[in-house]
Length: 106
Image 1 (cartoon, rainbow, N blue to C red):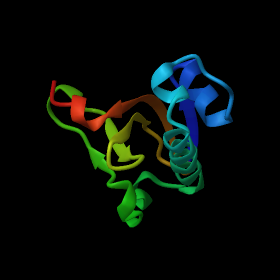
Image 2: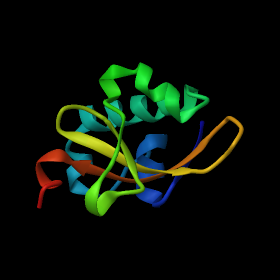
Image 3: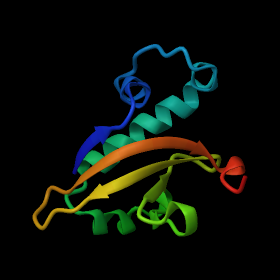
Image 4: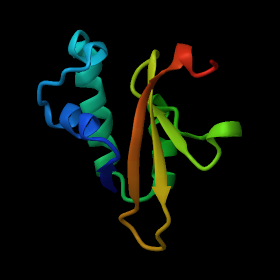
């Protein structure tokens, strides 16, 4: 799968660069798991194959987030992404954000 990042912060986190965002700077375990999750997304050819990775908890979002999908980074965070329509693999996604699950109901 081809991965694009909506913000430079998300790309920098993936590339292991130092970031100024305190939420991520103080949580190296989250950054490590984020990188691992993005690498997993990179290895998948088709979106449907994400269902095989039960730990990712892949889901298409509903309500205000309809049209987007998510995978879990860990129990506390998830990655929100947009699937780019494509008939042939590799499919493409744009990583929009990393969101703390405890805040997603706010």
